[in-house]
Image (cartoon, one colour):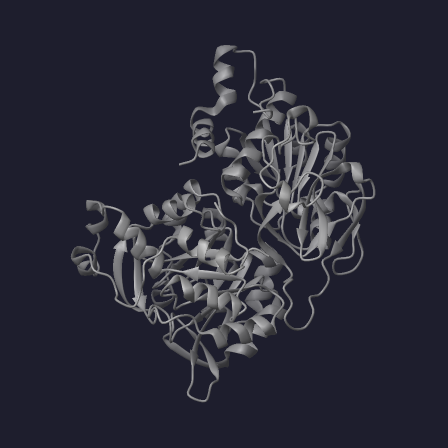
Length: 267
Length: 283
């Protein structure tokens, strides 16, 4: 068992935030809302939260979302259906409010894409509009002998600035590290994460790009950051020990923001 | 693209089993230890198949899925006896990331559309179990290779992709469990006919077979059972618990393996792929 796993397992069984609570009675347990808009499989996200000691619940209630210390917007499926469901559940306004007041908001896969201005998936659809830019398709692969299958399904490398194979496994000093104080802190360049997607985001403002990944000839934005809003095209909850590290960092971010614990994402 | 190496665990009741041509299962042990070991040693995903669920119309996997999902955080695909959107939801709730459907999808292809709409295409793997006929055609079978359908496997692959399948798991029943290598023609013909990823299943006997099905069979992922299971068994002491269940445990007690299977570890398989210029995620 790797150290990552041991740490994560320890975090899950002792509940880091809760230990602090018992010591200083006044501090409450931070809550995490995993937004359920009726599409996709949220249980792996819930399990990852539990493993890093987050008190998370799956919910469709806008009250739960607004009251949470951190919000996770996961999702697979079609963009248009997702936005329609978010509107029907009255979650569009609350999610924008969470983003506007800088409560930690984590998007995963379709969750990232929903944060953009819009998508052309199955017709044109308006997104949550937190980040300027479109969601675009990888493009249909050539008829024969294509190496680029769509959807991309599997493990791919995640880089800080450019997809540089020579930079694999380098970890810059904290002061120079764009991932310092983000959920990706402590990850070397070029680590593998698990992807499943046909579309990717193209933010207008390149300063929001947190990580980049190459698939075939396309180098695309695989994570974004705006304030305390972080979103990933990949699935950290399915990405083994490195993915668990991302969740531990997310737990640290949420606990820190809720005033429960010092930030741990520099670890 | 990194080629995925996916240990396949056939489950019967509480046990990991392995058959030949999807029949004659013998008990190899408890699946939990195998799953945990593969996760820690670089498996890219895990694929669980309830080997008898389709036959008896029940699903005994849920408890095993729950335990595995707790231990292992790589994608877990589960198949066997899933007949409806409700069945699919049950295994996803227990901790599966994707489901594989075969019998129910051939009986009612709309299930693919409904399930991919509800859970996302990427959650729905259509499993195609094919038998090669003398004239070179391939026919899709259901119920673990027992029932003939008259459906052409290639036509069905394209239809399943159109209906919204996220991936296809393609098993050659002729080769399954034999260690004679994958059916390269079946894999290549399907892989070149669809734009979604194809997981090659059935037939791996040694590391060279794995490289071959990627290079010649155009597989995007490779599912392997016997090679990995026998390697695990050779390198681990079996514990009493492994012998506790009913079933054919004679093989385990004798401690012999099939002569056509060369046991190999995930590391050895990935090293072989790497040496042959095939990109894969190294641990």
